[in-house]
Image (cartoon, rainbow, N blue to C red; front, side):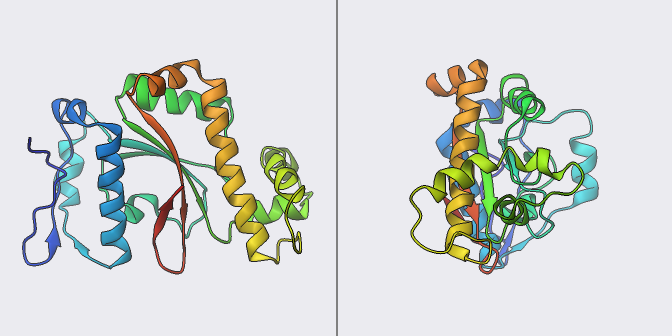
Length: 222
């Protein structure tokens, strides 16, 4: 089976094309995970990606068949499509500080998977996350506390057993809270969306977590 996303090496450059509906339907969640892992490897190793974005914009103007949907933090240092070496039309990307779950995000995830056929949900956290640090520090400005209340359960959970300084200046504590927040988001997706839970149980999709390491560009799947 040939899938357009497959690597076609020409002088060290990577070419890929947006999927058709038929090609999207042939993908499995595990195939998509492998594609994202390979794309991230290319990104971290600074492999050159060649894409004609003007042509690609025209190609996907009237349709889209993305492989996956990524729930990412809004951090400007995490360019999601680049991190996975994907082009226009390859990924749905939802961005919100702290990559947490609410009703609107659940609806967006359901649209991406149930309506538009994405095979994978990735909850992507990252190193040095400002939202995580703000939740640890109990930042109290404007509407920020309401947002941070979605992340606070992760802070409280980690604080119960963490050995060491429980502050935002401790990278180990921040990382532990980041990972717990990813786990909480995955649990919320499964608990609060019967649609997505059923799709995962039936093997139509997978819901996975990952962390982005800013200093290396590598994504570690949990």
